[in-house]
Length: 263
Image (cartoon, rainbow, N blue to C red; front, side, top):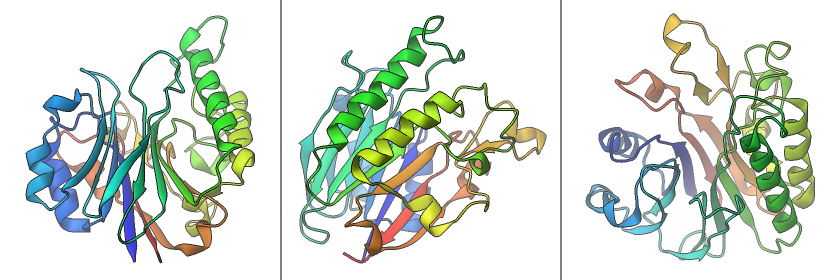
């Protein structure tokens, strides 16, 4: 069995102690981090080395964005795609070696898209849609068992947000984003493991705004995802989200997801 986790950590150096706490408690074989906010040479390698996560693929940049995949299993870096088309560090792909051999694991941080859901008024929103379109063209050509995980910054289903009607015009849940993400899903027949194992309408949030969570309102959204190729999805045994991390001191606004596979 192989367990794979994903977590938008919102600064890996600021929250290194929380990553340690999570890894010690949950013991995933592989952890995909997004928004590490650090260049590769300043990544806290020693933190992961001491816990046995001796295999790492890091695509970082100073102060913003960035993704890292750390693993107890051997891996090799497989690809780095610039789906943003501007040089930002938002993707790294690896191939697992040893246990899980041959699995391609894609770690992605899709842009948030700004606050206005209008390409003409907000270039960031257009960049987000274009990012997804480039991912869709890539997904058309996948020919190996693949798992794509990360912060997609889209809550696709009505049950993926605390108030569907209220959020229809809010970036992350607008119809155009949902439709664009669906085209990506259709391009490879991806299986949404979050909803395979926790079917709608069950609550399955992964993100709560810093502004609203502490008012004790459960104003969450499901922005983080783990999607499997059709040939890989049947091997997923379980999926869960680790909500307790959101209650830790100075937490990330996202929580980790973990899927276990019979590989």
